[in-house]
Image 1: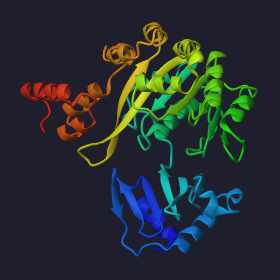
Image 2: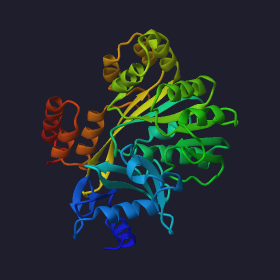
Image 3: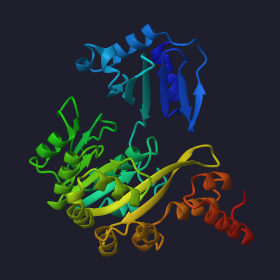
Amino acid sequence: MEFSNLLQFAVEQSASDLHIQAGVAPMLRIAGRMRTVKGDPLADELVLDLLTQMVPERFRDGLSARLAQGLDFSYVLADGQRFRCSAYSHLSRPSLTMRMIPQGMLSISELRLPPVLETIAQAERGLILLTGTTGSGKSTTLAAMINQINENESFKIITVEDPVEFVHQSRKSLVSQLEVGTDTPSFDQALRQALRQDPDVVLVGELRDVETLRMALRAADTGHLVFSTVHSSDAPQTIERIITMFPASEHKLLLTQLANSIEAIISQRLVVGHDGKRRPAVEILRGGAVTAKFITEGRLKELAEYVQTGQSGMQSFDQHLLAMYEAEEIRGTEALRWATNPEAFGVAMRGIKRTGGAGH
């Protein structure tokens, strides 16, 4: 199959990812499951030639050696379909993963996200973190929240990404999107420049290192609304992961900064519904006096209990999963698979059955 046809096939199959690896046939991830595309195993030379054509020019010299470090870049078809690409070396053989970026901008409601995210996006300042594993929909949710601001507020929005995924057209707001490696050498350098460019909202693709985190906290402290992502499972783990990035001598000050800056920590998992489509299960922690107290005192485990009070639209994963199960949007087996506390969740499910709620 020609590469262009393969990409079109991936789009038609609603695949989230395309995997190209020398030595095996291409594979697609569809509704969370890997599927093999019929065809012959790909030769090393074919995959390397393909990568040479796809990667930005700055990566082409010594491409084979560069793969050992991993390369992240974006790829755009003539019709505007975008892919986030990660090229790498597997047993010294060239490989590529392409993440499909949905065309068009879906709203928070269209993504079936909790309505409180619309309220969170209206915050005037602070730090909003999207957390979850790779492929849990963090970028899509961020794009929906930025889009809401773009459509409704007269702001200056700056995004710093590696690579740029969703492209935002300036609507009511002015949007500037910077791609690391093309428009700026690094996240922290881009943030330093961004704070001199009169922004109201700053999106940082990922908090990867101490300097980027310092700049993000500084931006939030100086009255900006800052969005970013962290690879962590929930709010307590997010705080812990951030803290461990810093030397122990700075932990107390960092906890105070985080406590004063956190507007919300939104954690996501994608679950499969009755219709076979994936939808987000979301845990939400809101900032405020109680959250700040728990963070500054290092009582992170108590944050999980606080989330379950439901104040200000907060909710735990299990509360959201139970609501989806009760509404017959997901099966019990799928809910249990993603539940944080499967034993307690099973008891709650049986309670729903007894009162005539959702079935199996």
